Every structure is written in C-alpha cells, then in structure tokens.
Image (cartoon, rainbow, N blue to C red; front, side):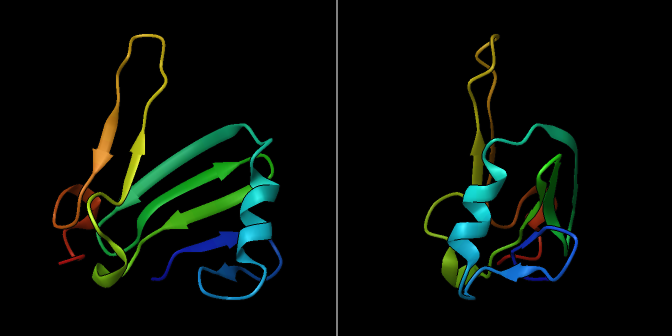
Length: 89
C-alpha cells in the first residue's frame, strides 16, 4: 500500500499532483486515532482527514518517521525493517 492522504473522497497518492496541498490541509487537525501494521504502515486519522505513511525502500534515507515534542520528552522513530515496516527492506 503506498503513502496516501485521504479526505473521504479519493485519496491523494504521494507522487500525485495535489499531494503537498492535501498534506497542508491536514495541519490544523487534531489526531483522533492511529494504527500501524506491517504491510500497511502507519495510519494517522485526524478530524481533517487521514494520512498513511508506507514508503518504498528507495524513498527512505534514514528513518521513515519520527514523532517528538511531548511534555515528558518521549519520542518514537520508525526505521525500515522494524515494527510496522518489516516489509520495507
């Protein structure tokens, strides 16, 4: 499954025209849920839409995703071949 952004109509593919604008439309949103699974990647659902992160190996240079900025200074990093990206090798 490729990386996509979904507003309920037709998903925007990562390499399609309009992807960057679609990603910007998500930014004011609040996260309502997240899921991750091998073969699917990470799906983040916001009140403004959803984004699925599942790159091809040739699109990854170091890490796939990183989240930080929590009050307790916690962070999470996703790498190819690990966690929900076991298939990205």
